[in-house]
Image 1 (cartoon, rainbow, N blue to C red):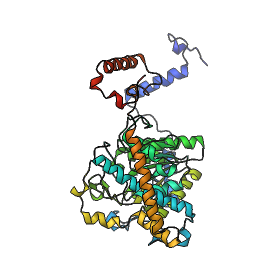
Image 2: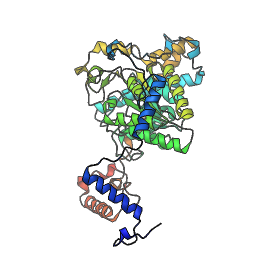
Image 3: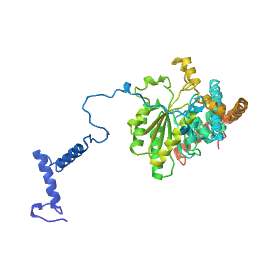
Length: 450
């Protein structure tokens, strides 16, 4: 309510209480008189009372107790986070940890792992022959793909790094789709705009791979937060390597996911190397799992070459995400048997005997041992499958190689919903130029322009 007062003459329509308050602030500022700390004493007293009542620290952001001896935490004295495993020499070590998967599921795991292995070999060699521009193999890490993919809901959203082709294969990405993408032909869903192995599929809930390292991690946290708000009963899984965990995006993603309680599984493939940089030159802590604990996330470290350990951990992590709306960090300890990519020569920074020692721990060999002991696979089936899988891959390879390149008009589309006038003008000029000088452009190798 506005009150007229003799002291407020000359100041029309002003609230006197407001004016008094403003003049009081100005007076305290000019005379350097501090504003009274009205409730400071009672707040301080309450904090002391609570601390004395529990006889322990009451500082925000920590859970601890008082000690009376100056002792530092020395990482080297810690035993380290244990590694969860299920199988040894083809046998389940503890009955309670047996995932009890049926024969068809386990055989599919094995067949997809070996199919991926064969496809890697053929596409790697095709790059060496100059038939595709780039490739990255998955040798040694197949168990992390199939074990985790099998434990997810097919509609759970996947954010990959670049070495998760097996997850797509498990979900139904065809050999033709793999080959078309690597060749960048007219049937490539990315329309030839991406490097090879940068797969993606909206139908399979697999977000297209992006080259810059770790950019998928904060995106995954954001997608998971959206899932949480939508209450759709799904979660997000984000794959990354231990090298990517050194990026700033990784720390931002983990912290956002933890503080916002996002239903996301951060799945770290710790394969020992970030291109040519070994883990001992990447970090000094106890792997990546220790960071999950540091961010307040439910965390587990597993044997990434044990497909059943991967399956069990991912299944349990998904349950936590969906039921409790909490993030989970899985660190899968594995080994990159192949080179980082076709641009890398790993013999320059590691010894052959090191690679061979891990090659015998292959997740494929270990699952084969289990199949043998169950009587679900034999050498005859192995030989037949090898021949059939290689035949299927070579046929898809041949089809992709013969297909034409994408329409050059795709250079100008898909950035805007409708092509704006300035891009339409550039497109028209391009067509006119190519039509005028066809001898200089391999137009016959591309899908026909309109």
